[in-house]
Image 1 (tube, rainbow, N blue to C red):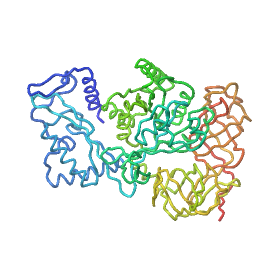
Image 2: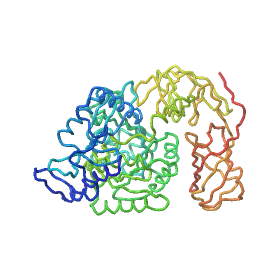
Image 3: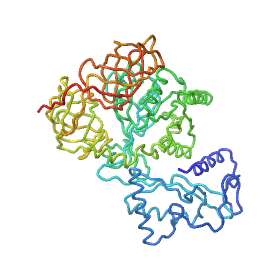
Image 4: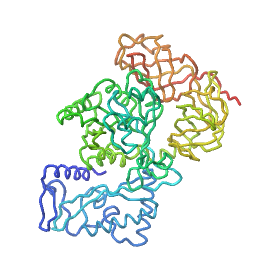
Length: 578
């Protein structure tokens, strides 16, 4: 989005709050001091490029515009934002009301031709040398899904215990406000002790859909997950993680293994930054997951308390270690701008203040999710899909009448029903053959799984005892590198004393989680907090499948560090068993 366009919408929102508007002769309202900030358009504007004016195009021109829209939707993985009334160089020319209606009508025809819908996100007036009002508009174009290939964004939900994470997700996905005593979160819990204590201890997955026109699709109309998937053009998959410190290893596993696109840090307005809040923020930043913040429970606090919590967050985000730019969202315009800027710049950190009981500002968060674009474009996904199949196993189940089922993420390639793969490594470093019987995405059947998508795969009568979390299912043609030992460049974030040879830590690399021993420090005898070094690790229990360049996170008690895998020492030649 052009910065001048976002500045106009932002200034408009500010003007609306302050009442700083003036009325033209014909009764239309205009904003002050626009001419000082932007060059004025003449009464006879020059040739208008495609997005600027779409009034009664010829058939040839219309076909060209429709082809251009189709290409833009492919590049945006099913979404594109058009700015009507704005020149390519950012000049805010604007259109008359008649021309704007005609342009939107043409845009709607183009969208129908390529199988998409349009939603006007926002409209604003611009200064012009005319008494007639001139407007610009931002329009979201979203493709109607076919064959379940909806846009799917994964959002990890972080925050301290009792900050309201599960309650917020319950309200978003069930469509009903909470009663103030945790009723909304009950459907999210997986274990009896979670229901009894109200505290999440496992990883649960929830979905929120948006249709092609931007409407919310959730369980409010007693829909099944399959019906939500059929109706939705865009899906937000929430990964609800534990907030209590004793479940930290589960939270880290969710962040490293489930490959979230974004992280939502929930902070309680009445307690502020407490408990594991800083730690969760640090984890997301260490793993380079873009993060935005939700301040919950504002109905329990005075306005001053909420403002104090927001200021506290802003101070932390601006610190040298974070270098973030906080952006408080208080209107629909702010939410639209925040969604677009958040995906463009990793330093922007939107902050929402809302209540799951009163519903205050909940719609702003929904607008944000509706417009939030994917981080990767179609070209990157195409490249991943052309590689050999690699599926990371995060969960293992036994389902009656189905057999063994594994859940996880397809890292690369394409996986189809009936495909023959190999799974491993076993404790002996071997791989075993298996067949994919069926695939489900978001609890509904799916025939083809593409790179970057999460799903569950049914493996029939394959022996569950041969599987464990951290394994991978790969194409038989792949020659995976299995290692007991590997080297990594690390930064020691915290250690009470000195970090030295022989120290044991729990290592997290993707879906791999295992205890490893420090075998050697390169060029040093010991490490202290904040120091960097090359380290050789050795797994204790069994070999693992790793990749050079993978992000690494290790911990042991209060000891924490991050790094990157730089070298693998293959355990032995790849072996495959029938």
